[in-house]
Image (cartoon, rainbow, N blue to C red; front, side, top):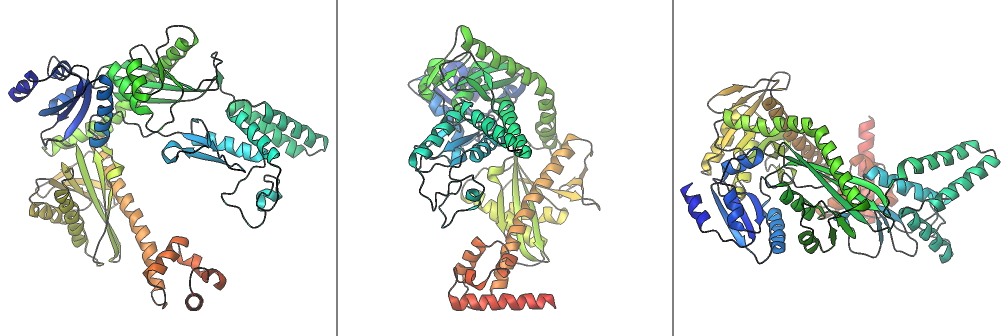
Length: 591
């Protein structure tokens, strides 16, 4: 603590970012401040509760970087969080991406569902965001049905099924008047902007025509489409009639948690909303501003954002490079208040579920730390093996951080020797993993769990000791019914109460690594089976095997191919030999 006090006395009053570190020198939190000295010192003064108290208890050192303005500090903070992915910052990270409807700007347009992460810069028309992919797909299906626009990615040599059921004009073979295409395009754009008049009139006209022709089933179908538009596509109207795309942010706080609600307003209608609840480290103003700054990483920015008065609108406007306002009166203030009310409702409804989730993850993780007498337990790496009678040996590793799966860092290991040797498989996987950890200076786990008994624990611990790593290894033992029963180390066994949150966490880890490893084993086995069957055919080497594997996933698919299809990929002689070989295999199986 004297060391911390000494560093605090040297802090500057300039704006900048600070990086809190734990006993291993790992960055566990990144924050920004107008005044570094005041902000960083506040962590070590007075009494803290909740996540802030837990953070402070782990801080043994800190670094700081000064900048010239608060905007620069916000930019730097965002970049540092992405770079280091600190333990206490990932609580607010949101990987949510929303679907958009894209109308391509081609001679004959197509409708597609896209997400912003995969979207490239182009001149196509984008509409959304939609609350979920089902809603977006429903709109696309409706428009594709009502307008005979292009459905195919590439043009065929003859009209497809869509042409014959009158949902396409056969652009691949027919010459279509560009004016007719432009008219359809304009009506679709109007519909996506919120004007449903064109398509509603179109459906009503078709419904009446079917009814007059006594085609009552089709008339009923049209009636159901009208109901779909009324229920699904008619959104809540707002009194702002300027058609500016806006996002409205609101918040509510209680018991150390902040709830954030976002309304998406497009063409003067609320088309969807997003909510997020997480525990606070900073004050509500800092947490909300940081969340808004990071929110548009995966989402297209609107023309304007409305925020509560606790936000620094000028700072956010400079950072996001869009218009950010704090409304003072009228309909805009009503919308912000409505977003805040919804945030409060969401927090009240979900708080009990959040508390239960904390007990099942974070609290259970802390219980495991105490049980094993570990100084800290932030990261756990769990291993499992899979093979088929000694062949297609694989191992999988999953990662849990603070009691929750961290899928970006899952790893697969294809074992070099095919033999029925579970200990040898575990030895190779553990060695390869932690040799790489040392070589590339990767983050080390606080605990290694192997899905197996004492033998696997001893093998893993021997490898860890040989690499001079100080990491505890434990095993998860199963009973006769293949269910998790005990946690064991090389020294002792622990009976875990099957009704406890710790048992729930361990069982979840065991299921996660088992499913991950088995799925990988199935992939390897299916590819390996196909490769081994192709081995006797001369002229099929590694390159041609890969081409066949890429196009046809199973051997049964290849067996059903005519010779003419095989000749498209392989030389005629090789194709004939493969065809005859597979035919003989079929005859053998039939005997």
